Length: 473
Image (cartoon, rainbow, N blue to C red):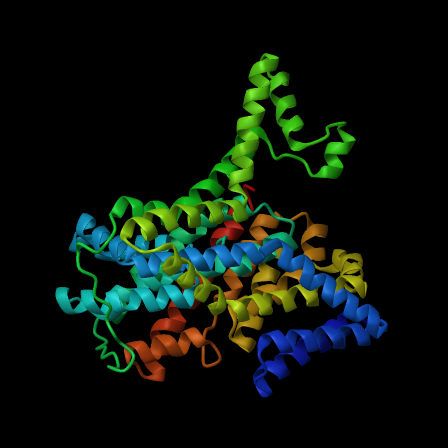
């Protein structure tokens, strides 16, 4: 019966989004209530469960979303995104322009939301196409493949960050592991695939393409632009390296079992166990704890925002009021994304409180499919049905959690497998599909041949690499 309830809930969600065109935020809330009622929960208990899910979700991710939006806006308005693109191409030369664009997509796409990255960088693609006489689609696909992978696979983007918490994965390790499938996914789905579309003639509509000009003297330096873009990534990777070199610090319950009060004590025990003096152990544990603190996604993005405010804002001649006003506008731009993720947390909590997840866990021994592959398939079905990579990821994770735990699958790889499915099958119900079509002036058939094939290729390559990684992790 619980599986039937989940199936009915999923059907309700799809009908509300596809048939009635409801926003995913409202559709997920209605679905949460429906699943709770079908599970014989008291209406007040359902409401408490929804509020708890929203509160827990926002507590974990709202600062990440806010700081990410602020950083992206500063990169855009300061010209840092333009500086990275142009200087990278100058540095690598026209011969390697596709790889320069791929790297640019990675650097700009990690801290910026997908739509914002697209809107900032697409005019640069048209400018390059005009000045270099190179095919536009051939230039665009490497860049957009990197943006898609960053959006669906890698923290600190909202969906992969949030499902990291659902799967109880280490966010820093998700970022580190995610770099592995990202490289072949972008090389195959972006660089290699683009060679088949060189002959497609692109005429961007004049009403959509408005190039933003920056004088060279206005652009910030390449070094400071890249530093601001990758500061959160560098800090998060430091945390992952600390875990790999010194062992994952146990959760609080395990610390209690070991008779250790906090994580600092855990590091102190590591140093003393290796024969270091008490003073060295204290200094070493403090340094490691500092790196762990700064590698938290909230702190990493906060640090990047502070650096960007002073280097790309104030030092570029802007007043603090100007920087703060643009940052405030960026927060408003992600408000609906915040609400969708919050309602996804509500849906997850209702599944827990209605004991559906416990039931799935109890019967999970009968499932023979690899949980990584199952997460990929379920997520790809949601992507096909709803058109939203975020909704696909948020809906798949709570369903797959008990199966993943029962099978002992790596939670970090579960995040990546779910993300790989969420990038598949982009078509009419995906806003990215229409953005690509309209900005490049393509027909529907050409959009399927280019955009949809690129997205699906990225997803397929991603899950294949994740399955290979699961042999070693």
